[in-house]
Image (cartoon, rainbow, N blue to C red; front, top):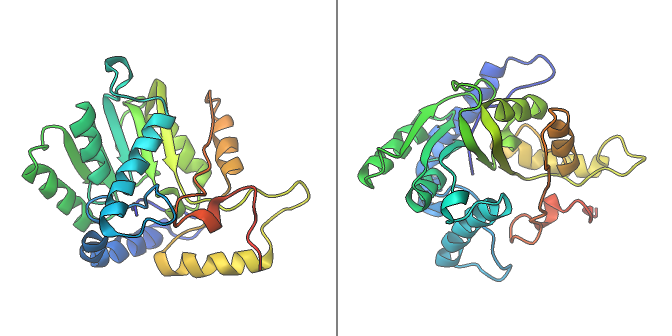
Length: 258
């Protein structure tokens, strides 16, 4: 479960939204770490896998699937070199990439407690020269244009209302020829005659939003449109609906039933 900035499109003060997200995870990080370990995101695994060890392995597999899908590997010519993890939790993903590929990694999110923990863990594991973490807003990143060859965001976009601006900021800090990877919960794609999800679907999703300071889901088609509007090339997506906790929410071809 990654943490990052949120913004609203209706004029609501983003500082209040961001503060709510930061406070939620400042208070709960210890609990999440006990449950998830240092990879605070869901895993890619068989639906029958339910043990702690299976889930930890599935979290690693999720990272590997994302990187493989984006064309990265241990081939010297296909390794990421400068990586940004947007919504980094306590740094598990960035540390894994740094350790495996020798990449320089920076992680950002809104929670000071998580950032403090991420830097402490990196130092304890001898990775302080490879990875660093800082509090920053995903919509106003403190980085130069084109600084990273890989910008990765796992379960972060859900906390951002203005996803178009989110996509634009990810694109801004990505180097020419670089890669952006977003792994996110999405609702189904809308049909040709639909302007929104069905009322019962919105009601069900609102229960999830309210419990975790989530600012809303969009569809995979929405993300593709956002990046197409920025003239990015080779925009593709992979449906991970068979992962054991995601199936009912992100399959764009099989809507939920009341």
